[in-house]
Length: 214
Image (cartoon, rainbow, N blue to C red; front, side, top):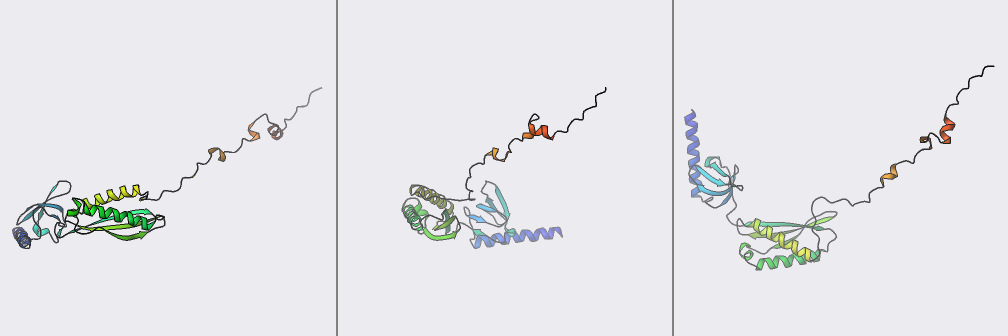
């Protein structure tokens, strides 16, 4: 019985590998998400597919175990960047600065080759009490979305610094208050703390005097 189950798994792996190759689901060099593992395809076999992970590890994935495949190297990718600014910023000035950054980046090499469309300022993604988020998006070459996002963040930060537009993020810090005087909570010394004070003498019991003998 054990041999039968092993043979069935072996046949399943081979058949899955054949269909993957015939359907050209992925190839060597593609970045894929196989569910059980993800990474760059370094070898495609009839029974096993080898992937190299982001940290350099090698995954041996049986083709029969793969139920879904996400190929990150086919078609195109999307780069998205969220820019958080103060709610008091002038929206027209923020958009004008972003338009200038995106237009310049789209014309410069090598980004004009990695970008497969214009970088769009989509508008406000969310508005909070003390901040608002402006979202940028662009269609890129497969596998290059992360590089485009990093470069776009770098350019936006530099342009905002020049335009004196403050980028905010994370938890909002509470306003700093002046430190309280530690002596304010200390009571003034009591007059009863001095044993020689008149108040202490007044509250002391009167010592009884012995009658003197005649």
